[in-house]
Amino acid sequence: MNIRSAEPADAGRLLGIYAYYVENTAVTFEYDTPTEKEFGERIRSTLEKYPFLVLEDGGETVGYAYAGVFKDRAAYSRSCEISIYLDHDKRRRGFGSALYRALEEKLAERGIINVYACIASPLKEDEYLSRDSERFHGALGFVKVGEFHKCGYKFGRWYDMIWMEKFIGPHD
Image (cartoon, rainbow, N blue to C red):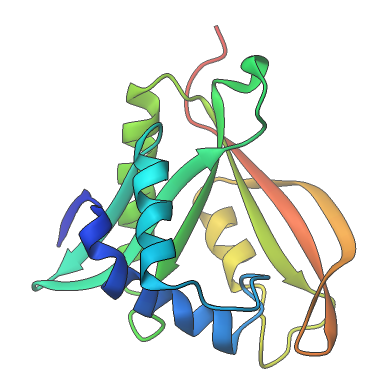
């Protein structure tokens, strides 16, 4: 297993991972898959301030995780939002945990101490969305701190959105 910083040149493979979630799930509330150029720009702009990591296993890219702005105010500078996507056939093999541990290390080096995850949550689990992401984050020490009801509409259904939080450093 190798974890490295992403590059805009990774956009094609990473977009292939993300496209599955856009087109087949309510994990992301995005309706349309971005273009490879748009995705490459997302990588480039993220890397200006935050880590964007890629996990490879046996030379194959199997997932990525990145951080982004939580709220755009100076007082939030020690906080960020994080996201993770794994190849849908490579889940439950420890890749997600490894990616998040590496991401948390990189964030701690930058003085980030609060990480937040915005997670789609089903009213009732269905073929588009389970509570797997909430369970995954909970197993990694995140706690649920908020919930917005029926705020996302995809595939003709309403979904909730929850916020989960984890402290990765001391609040001195």
